[in-house]
Image (cartoon, rainbow, N blue to C red; front, side, top):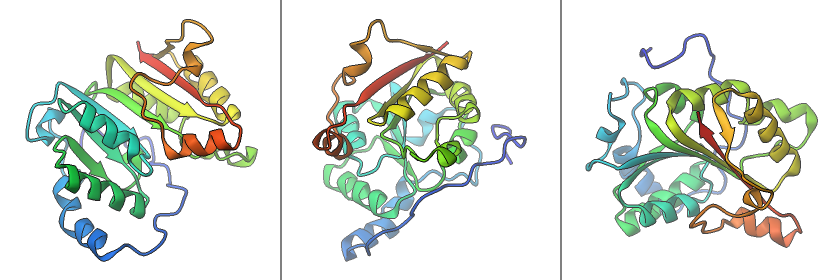
Length: 233
């Protein structure tokens, strides 16, 4: 175990499907041949400078947890080629889709991890990340499952450790109970300040927001979304 990890905190189990429909031949080949060239190797200590994971020196570093179909991550990576992105997604089909897009676009500023995001957070050096994105995470709508929500006191501790002072945690959801849950948990955490200046702020998409298929589905079903930004104190 490396010195960046926390032996006192057990890694939470991942709840959810890891694989859906069979991969197409090209996707399977890319997962075998391309993903290993982009994947984080958590069996080795993290570099002192996370920038060294990339073939260039990123001006900023962002982590997206549970990137789903990868639309947002890919958009941001192409929009901000001088930023290094770490995308975490345990669902095989979603990972395969993004790997295919990386091959198509030639993007060189994305690194990937296909398992539990808490493992990445415990591996990263302290104060190494500029922004963490958690966009439309599984809301676990039943009250008895709320403890499975990714926003929790222990995971906010993880965020606080890896974010640089002044870094941001950005959260989006169309589920009111999860929005309120996140506001309460972040409000109770001493390392985070909500940046909203008025009510319109949290109803306004993040700058340059491309939208996602989950957001489009929510709107079709009559649900509005909230966009919350918290600053690492």
